[in-house]
Image (cartoon, rainbow, N blue to C red):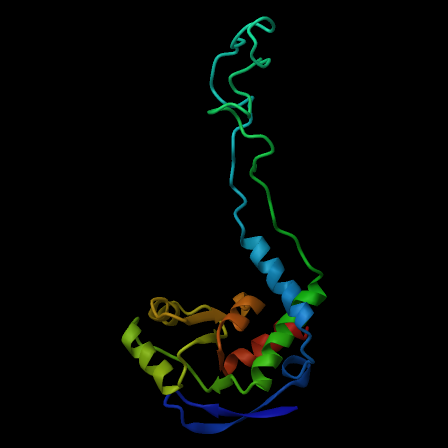
Length: 207
């Protein structure tokens, strides 16, 4: 079991917390992290690029000129892909790029990402994070106190006040435990974990 310091929003040490090795002490394997991130990015692709084939291009169905005797190449349609303004041969059509890795692999990827941040000393536990009103300046003050310029903040549940206060700050993102993912953990240099979200993480990943 790893023991780490707990800080308040003024970056003062206020206690310690024990982190489960099954969640924060997993051996990091880069190929698994790569597979999970690749799946996430593939699932975000819209896949809505679309081109018209020769059947879909508007135009006359008349043969441009007679088959023989003109000295020119045979042509049967002005919508041919080799003609200017014609259809596209083998062009993209709307498609779904998404796929799924096994649930165990996705969970393992999250555990490895959390373990990586702890082993790099880039994980900080905060005793609580509460805001009386939606105010970006106040939230930015807390991040400055915690020396977090590029950080992912994990909270236990959705909190509109915190989420809206943080959304205009570059390189800072707030996610509830339910929305936590490998890509965002690895994208941000630092991980700020609110203490009451640790139990939720254990429920999600160790169940």
